Image (cartoon, rainbow, N blue to C red):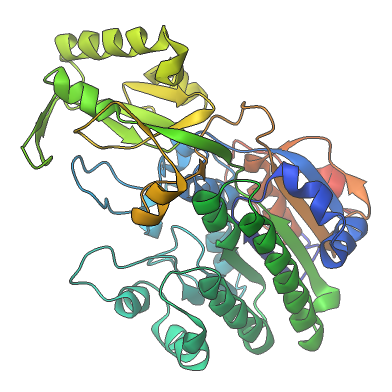
Length: 438
């Protein structure tokens, strides 16, 4: 299959929403890519719409039920900081970067989720030291490309301030520019988190979130300049995308506290989980409910009764309850027992003690970063909850609006641009946006 472009640059601006599109159309560098290419402000995300499953869907073309990354974090009841799905072995089946590597293409990835230990030529995976005895630099080095990362850290490490934004994205930008100019990869995937962070901590439409979009605009300008300076701009397809939107919320739901009251979780006086029969695993705007013993009929009926009673009162924050089969049909984890969707204004945490509902304000967020003022993870069926896709360059039709598309369609389309093919996928190649005759 003939490639449509020699180079594909995928830029993920985490939490870029369809609601941001009018602003993007006013900003010159976003506007130029929109006018030169194909675009959609109605991209349907996945369920649950959280970052790691979303980015895995982008590179596989599959829903979480098939690719296996069903949540950001692992099911580790009682851990205050569960481990994340950092590693490539968590993904079932092939990926865009695997197929590019097999075809002899040069691959590079900067802070792309679920790429730890991936076979990527130049890899700085998104991974962090979430245990006191771990070192941030070391966990990155051992799970990516050590010499590549050491060089980037030596050159640009001074820009970083831990995981804080916008400094982390400034470091990623400098690393991206250097990678483009010195490596000229055929496939480059880069993940920027500034906007997502600002929305979590200040709210969806906050001044801080808008400022992050302007910073992303400047980052886009510098990436385009780097492509031109490196001499590969005219052989490149550029893609700008989001993974999910977000919704403002002010109330946290602690289903595990209710499960503990029902003796389905045993909790110590200090709030530590000693044992559990049922557990609510948060996906922020939604949550999985797992039974330790799936065949324990009493636990099943106790949980179902509890959830049903909460559903009866809107103020309890539960909008919908899905069975395991219904969750799987929506692309989520088929191994859950139930899945619950929060109403607008609510989201889930995993605390096992305290009140069922906690009101959140900005002071709570400042005091404890587990609290947020906007989040995602909700069903993609929520109103005004779409994300964005913009592509321009080699092989892309100019000024072509795509009325609707899905996140699962992106991976197969990217593969086609590079002259590759993913395995049988849940998504399709969006052939109408491609110049296949050239």
